[in-house]
Image (cartoon, rainbow, N blue to C red; front, side):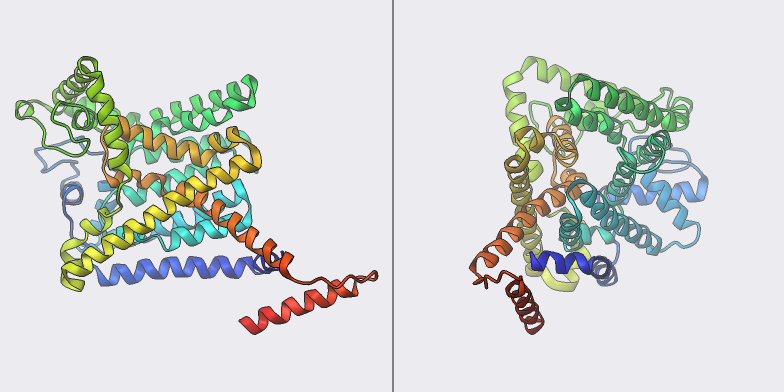
Length: 441
């Protein structure tokens, strides 16, 4: 275990280096690849500029909306009060990126120990897709940062329990303005304690219920705004029906598709309700087809990781050409496959150490499962697995740590031991290993 102790002895320096590398890679990317809004990014940009100029969230001052959650555009609108450029977007993405790096380490250390935390930090620091999103105007990095920040206070071992609960609810309440899907995160986390017995589960379920209530209360002002502007108290956004329909209709491929022509003249609320009812009707009338779509969406959710390249493609093509773009997509997807395999391996490691129940009922697996199930039911694209990224990195770090420990043990077994009753042999061996380490360095 000599190498293991060496890392722990210099853990602060290692943490700083990994953080600096992660931040440096994101800065280099942001300098090399400017922000160029496309797709949803273009909508967020327009909403932010309307909000900054007119104080109205919509395509224009006369077209208020709640189709997309307001949080991302509100954050970006704040930067537009100081500059019309996308510098503020990059700064916000860098702040979110730093939070993701630091909080992934913090949570992995809490769950699995210092060494797993360092490995998880390294995996996130070098994760191509998370780097690429530094130059994308989107909700992804903001949502992941808010999700992790609230998770820090969930079951926090230090501080006052009630204060921790309130802080988790407040942070996730604010995060709901970025993506409302955070609403059921406390429920997914409470399910972890199912295997701990009814009393423990009931206690955790009550905590989850309190946090859900806090999220709803935090979202209440925007619900009231939607009631006043749109005529119905939609909690945050009005796009659930559209997304649900995209993933559940006779023509669906499981991913994004254009909305049907008949909804063009409907209000946002009418459209949301109509498409939600159409999706439910499809599931009731064609359950076999709906099940096939579930399987298709599971594949579509995980079969690649190219969205960070696609949403940077125009500026990236000018920088490295079409072949370079294709190579970048391949590298990003290969990294995704490796981490996906590593995360599954991490679950196997946990199962071997603590049993199958422990492998299935833990916080990173629960949250990975929640976001997977959500989009398998609704609609799937590779961008929708991004909220699971920190948890996949943590589980992959568990597997890497096991490989590392096994390798160290193998090296220890292969080293000839000097048997010495007064322990001088072990001291000489330790000195020898230390000298080898310095020579290798």
